[in-house]
Length: 193
Image (cartoon, rainbow, N blue to C red; front, side, top):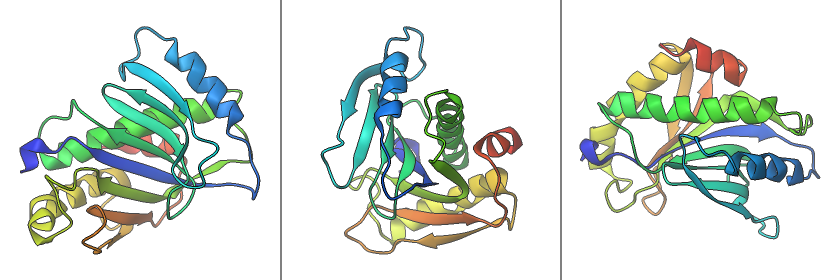
C-alpha cells in the first residue's frame, strides 16, 4: 500500500481580504508555464475564477498541480503531487512538502504576488488524493499515520504541532495540522531536517 503513495496534497491556508483578485497569480503562472526546464513539467494553466469553490487559478503539470485553492476550510496554496515520490512514507510526505514550499516561496516572492494575501505558515491541510488506494479508514490510518507523524516531526519539530484527522469516510484521508509556532514558508523550508 505505502509503495503506491504518490498523490499527496499539502495546502497552506492564506489570509485574504473579503475581495481579492487572483489575476496577478495568473500572470505569474503564465510566465512559469513558458519555462522549458521546470521540474514540474507544466502542461496547462487554468483560470477557474467563475467557480465558487475549488482552484481559482491552477498550473497543471505532469509531476504535480499547484493552485490558489478555495475549497474548505479556506483559501490556500495547494500542491497536489502526482508522481515521482520515492522512499518511505515519511520521505514521501517530506518530499511533497518540500516541493510545495519551494513553489510557494517562489510564488510569494514574485513582484506580482498580492501583498494582501498572507500565507499562514502555521495552518496546513494534508490529504491523500487517492480514495481507491487509500480510503479514509483504519487500514490507511495504520499504513500512513506513523510516517506522516515522523514527517511532521521533521517539518515542525517533535511536539511542535497538533494534528486532527478528518474521519468522515466519504472524504479523503487527511489531517488538519496546526504548528505551535508561526514561521514564514521560507523558514519552514530552510528548517526541514
